[in-house]
Length: 177
Image 1: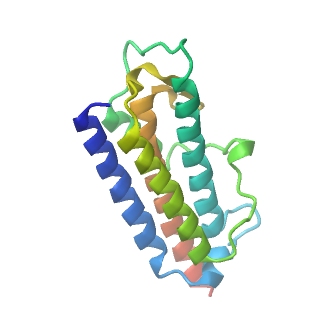
Image 2: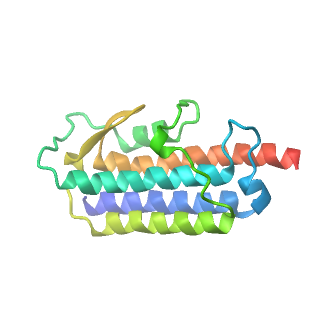
């Protein structure tokens, strides 16, 4: 990663972390764990999903960095395109089984602690790696093949997608409480 890529990525990560913290700040623990319908995730489950995806992205980047078979993309997506696609609530898809929440959080405080620890690990990865992330590629089921820099942008965009979802859940939840 270049210094500019690193600074941009860290700025995006910091901004999305602050946005997640802010959007759940005024949520009661009851609303945090309440599902508005059986097939709708609670805010706690949304947070769990965000963490699962982020951890998997970083672990995958670390594992693929050890592989000599990575091939850079000829036409990588721009950061703006990845951010737009990953943050969009219009392109809905069912999360793969391994990213479905299991209901591990019973309080907002526990979820925020876990999220901040996960985000710190992501920041540490960005700060400490000397990898050429343009050469590390793997596919996203909806967006297509992304390189490592794209994936780090995706982490922030994915957070924003779910911030919008949390805002929707807050509206519905506050109306029913």
